[in-house]
Length: 301
Image (cartoon, rainbow, N blue to C red; front, side, top):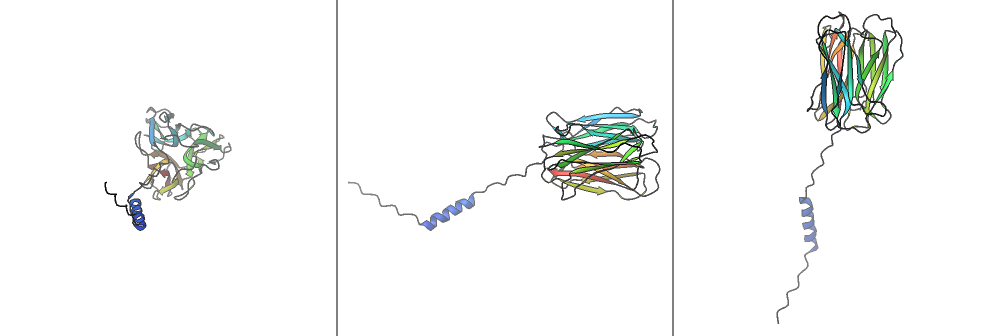
């Protein structure tokens, strides 16, 4: 008859607990990456013909499947002789924008050739994205201002404006998103002056591109030196780890004598923008000191 196996002694409880603890410590759970606030962000550009016509218009359209979060433009060859009259995103209070149309007039007779570039900042669909607008009164006053505010619970990703009835006789001096380095913007203020005496009635429209809250959304600003030079340029850059969804600008001290010639996000069809450059010229000779401010609306990349 075979021998019975010896009874297995129970493992001490303390040893079992220590072994379990060692196994638990050995399991490393990778941290989940922070999700991008605006995935698929790119900058699209479209440029008009170059000629000496008085008016120029061009539309930049987002690729199929993407939506418009912000806008920009650039006047090429005019150096203060043309003004952007329209920077108009499409869409509406219940429709996400997908394109921006830019229109510009010669401020005064200009014989040289010039062109206009529209920039569209585009992303994969963004929750709650809409375009809202607000219009000023229409009259012949020298100055016009209006604020477009996002619906309650939404934040500002981008901006636009339109001057109605001025046809090159007025310039946008303030195009300012609110917010700050620790506060998400929720509105945009548009202020415009007559560039020269203009007897007709005109108005200004502000456009706000708004979305449900985005991770890390903030407004960054940068100011040029204050002097009486004919040209001022300044760039506002998003902090490391953030990308540009939209932008704005402000001219200080010129009250209708300055023209923003460049309102240019960087980036490209395969690169997310992260900087907004603002370049402005004196529209007429102006001896006082003045500055330009660039505003960048930034969200987590």
